[in-house]
Length: 277
Image: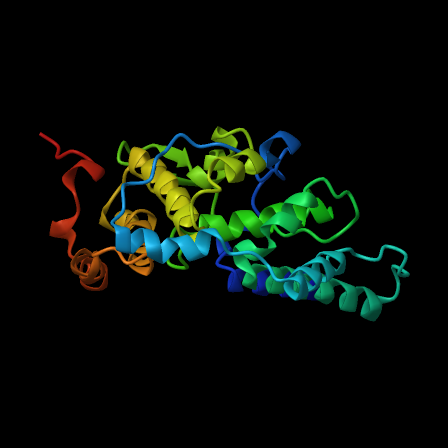
């Protein structure tokens, strides 16, 4: 089992999910009602050139061959529970197949979303992709596959743990454990329907903006907290906007310099504790 956990952690790290495993009891599997989705946030108007750059993404659809491969990978998420519990090698191989399927499905990005949504209520056994005690079904695997992609959290964002200290000096649960844009919208499925006019990258930006806003509400206890919990999200948003053709190169370079050189004097004052009188 130790090897199994190690394999899963490695796989999830590859998908930028490092802070999502082995959390205390607060780490709950997504409830059924959260798998449905809708957000009121609007996307800023784009230029004709930018719209043209994203139209292709919006219309992206799997080819018949890709559809076949995607559905085969979803079937591969099923863990064969008939395998003898004493047959470690066979169970390990089955575990590895599930991880492999999860990783490959992520590479299809939004092309796999329609099939993944179809399987949100699939109760067949799989392996856990967020918590080792809850959420072992294929439907859970499909849910987290989409959520991890849409959340698009950068590797240098946040650290292990359930809570962090805010500008007020108090401990606050991290936003990723307290909610999500999907939960606020009524579930992932409803969110996807409401945002189907957005490209894959635009959807990621929307989710990142939600997370950034929540982190800014908590603020930073000190400069290092800003560099870990807030700045990486600001940079990630600019990188995704750059992919859409937005003119953000100057601002992106500025923020990257602040991060690399730890320019404390460039941190917005409102995000840090007030000066003591």
